[in-house]
Amino acid sequence: MSRKNLLSLVIVLALWFAGDRIGAFAVGRILDHSNDPIAQLYGGRTTGNIVLLGNSRAYRHFDFNVLAKEFGGSVANLSLPGGSMELSVALLKDYIDRYGAPRILIAELSQICADSEAFKNMRPFVSRSARLSRLVEEHFPRQYRMGEVSHLFEYNSEYALNAMQKVFKPMPDLVLDGALEADAAAQVKPGTYFVPKLREVAAAKELVDVVRHWNIDTRFVLTPVVPEYAAANQIEALRTSAQELTKGFKFWDLADKPPLDISDFLDYGHLNRQGVKQFMNELRTQGFFASRHALINGTAVKP
Image (tube, rainbow, N blue to C red):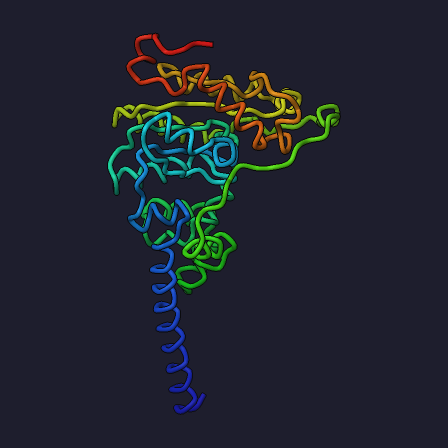
């Protein structure tokens, strides 16, 4: 290669490097103003003192207006579709580092059955969190290394694009519309969806340690799924593990017990709008929104 060509290559690489870093910095600053809850967490804009952790059954099953009204505060929704307990622990610790311990923590425990796929969506925040950086590198080393070469690559995802769109738009209504057919329960096939994963159970134990260390008022819950689907997918394995993990805490196990109809579900694992309303009412009946003092002293409303 001639000296002239080598110089041209150096200039091109330098321009690419500078453009990549400047572009990534600009996109990161844009995300700081997003209405996406995770972007708000790392952009220093979270205001909620009620933290919600979990996967899509937390993301879709809670009416945040009801939570805010019943508990008297605002909700920081740190749940994510596909979210794992390991991810939830990292998000909670980052929340505490930035804002202090939340007043109330709600943790939906079916996330101990999740895999690590949701960490891919956390790539835009690896420069903001040493915890996320370590976990993304551990679970997805190839994507992590590519992000080290090109910082803009970290924002090359549907999640990042959706979060940037929410700079200009509010978070949409997360409650789902639609309903299963009346004969859907008869079509359930057996599986292992609710079998806990050892790594996630270990993360749940870490969550309990964090809760105890900071003395956080915590509500552990399993939200509803279609009972036939729960039974066919080994819900008892999840229930047994959840009961063991929550010893010493109040635990609301509504996975397959509340008085819900098949028409209250969008699919086998998710409530629809009507089902969410029913679920909120059932939580109210079972003392979920009672004060910590009432729960400790056994004076909360009981089923």
